[in-house]
Image (cartoon, rainbow, N blue to C red; front, side, top):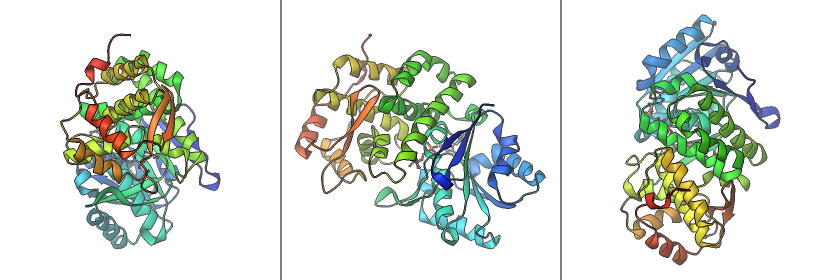
Length: 369
Ligand code: NAD
Ligand code: GLY
């Protein structure tokens, strides 16, 4: 196995291990760094992955409290968080205990927030089991739960002690979830890595067939890009906002359709294409660049059709985006494929007319090279 990546944050630096077979390796009990742990997962993942992991942690001499939460974004709430706190208090976990998040981004975000707040903050490790979580949500320390008035509105920055992305777990991930994760992989290439973009263009078929080598490379390159940005801007005062390419449009689609109708990555995929089209309108991208991006998203199997949503339903979601400042829209756009920037000079009226004029079928953009 190759050496881990490291997120460089001084005394809070941590490794990201990527590869097959990690769940049964001794790295996880070592990485927990505590004799008493709580393994927190969901009811779907408990049987296939949770129970074997608990067994191997106990064989390594750890005392394990197991918590299985209900599955799904609808349960990413303060009420579910209370189930975690109840279990930790009942099992008398203290500040030296470690939480283990086993699951996708929903579990990772919730367990991270529980770790940030239980007894004013305890360590946790991330064991992401979706592609999205392996390339994005498990790295960087953003933790949160949803509030009825907005997604991820209650949260904290709290970095994990280590991340273990076992690529074997992706074998059981449903196709739709896997494809949605590819949008976040493409995102890193479009933001800041032209070489990775070319690699993705050449290797999308291997990735979609879940070839182990291709997956490990794509996860590693995504995490490397994310780690570099997080190390320079942990609390998103600047550059880290670039990691939200496609998200302003994407969140608006998710919200306007009702969260859960489209998966996050599906909406981000279409959102990146909208960002590319707006970048073209502003004179930064050629139409051939937009076609190139559309072809890659189509090759990944991501949706190529804008959902039928009136502009007036999308705009309010874009207006409450966490990136906005002082009532101004802040959009992440592209100067070139592989070079994103923060745009804050697009007015509400401009955005409205852009959205109203967007082509409903994006497939025609993916013309042959
Ligand atoms: P998810 O956690 O809901 O997982 C998707 C589904 O796949 C669930 O039903 C889950 O039980 C199942 N699953 C997970 N691993 C599996 C496996 N190996 N085999 C079979 N089924 C499996 O969704 P997600 O896409 O991983 O995460 C989405 C969440 O991540 C959102 O809440 C989003 O806000 C958050 N997120 C956070 C960050 C961050 O930086 N913290 C970044 C991106 C997204
Ligand atoms: N998912 C964006 C970030 O972590 O900043």
